[in-house]
Length: 348
Image 1 (cartoon, rainbow, N blue to C red):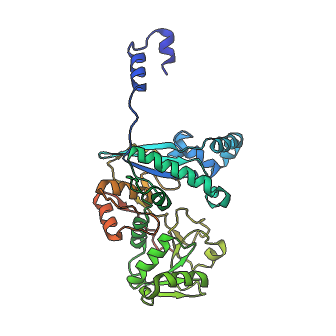
Image 2: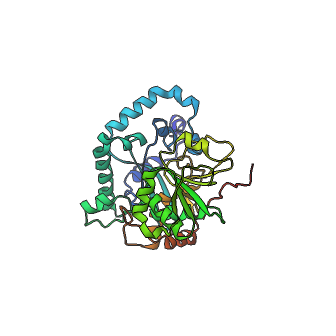
Image 3: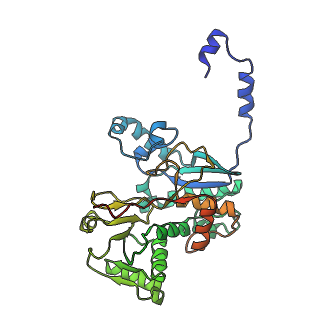
């Protein structure tokens, strides 16, 4: 605001007209929308309209944010009252207009049964708003409820599997799979068995679920074991315990298949990022970090929607449906997205 220009009458005479004309500009219609949510109460400060210095760095729980607890508490009340998604980021990639919309819900609320209906309603409203603007988003339940949808709903599972498979060091003969079994976990277990890599699980209930899903397709490569010492590569998801981490061998590589990373408890082990890739230089207006990821690194769940739009794919990818893993991986590399460097296991 040119406050002093107003006082000393040095303001450009066209300023008021320019401002009024800018307000009349038609709202930008995005081609792709990534639907996300807040993670912790303090995560509000890591958005662009929070602290720019924090948004420009990977997410961390800075101690001084506790001094802002009155503001944090007020923001929690506000998110409870404000029951609509809001735009947190706008980007451009070639001719595509990209937006990130946030649902005013925290990560823990997604795990509460009594919050399920509220969360689903917000997602549904976002999908229908996306339908009005003709773009991409997320969710099988919404496809079934609104079969006339023209938008493509993309959960990014196939790209997540592709990135995980390409994150496992070459020459690996066995991996340990531990954590809540998701669509991605089942798919990556199947792909590894098909490649002749042994998949070891620690819990009987997890083995039974995987064995029931894979059947003879596991090629005899799915096994159960009580030993933590046989595998140096762990694919981990939610529900990985601290006790289990401490039992891992020195030099173990932890590769998350979930959207949230595990706590880094072991200094003598290696931790890869959650499934993500380096973005092309053509991606514009990237001035903040996506959660805990470095600048210009994007989660595969976000990239997947962009690929769908770039390639013009017509199918949904949600629920039990998954795109061809090789096709998605090749398209990703073709458009300039690059895999991240995996921490080396040679370090002792």
